[in-house]
Length: 217
Image 1 (spheres, one colour):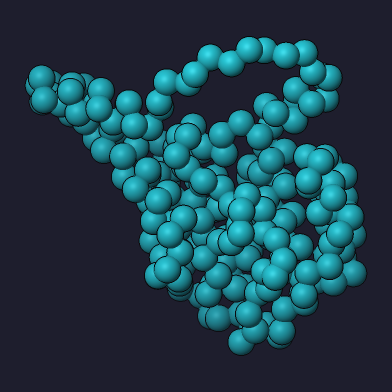
Image 2 (tube, one colour):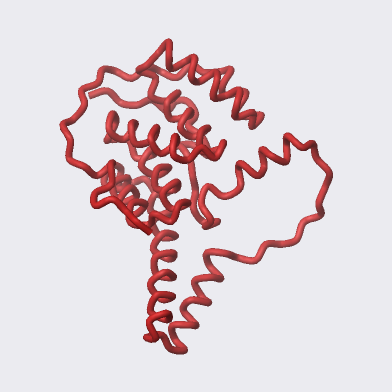
């Protein structure tokens, strides 16, 4: 795994001056999101942002929708832009971390989550995701120790214990028939990361919802 020396969101760059954020007004996109019609939501959010480039919440929703569409690199770029424009908001860092973790970029994910909790010490979701990330990193380290011949029975047991936490057994569910388009939507939504514990979301749930408004400086 090749990682850049310094994650984009951690670089010390001049603070970008920005005016008051525009309050969210995306009822059509919200309806599409509720219906999990990600393509329609993206089109509607693009139109909203074109007309209101200061709408931070619309940008947040757009980045989230890109992730739901598995357009991860575009989502990472969108969330990174939000962290640069509104560094005081923890949610973009959290979602950026989830996308990094999905790609196995754990060092960058950790930096993003640590930045999230510094920006908002009361943001519990980032702490939970950070805990899950540490488990993944511990698993990586133990497996590396094994591959180098330094592992023992305790190492094997620790790997097994971590595996039980991060990939719990799923209770079999009865399959039901569903339209092909619904099935593709479900696949797009499966695991923002390979770790079930990771939660990809906004301040009030899986997506930013009113009254989420980016603060002004």
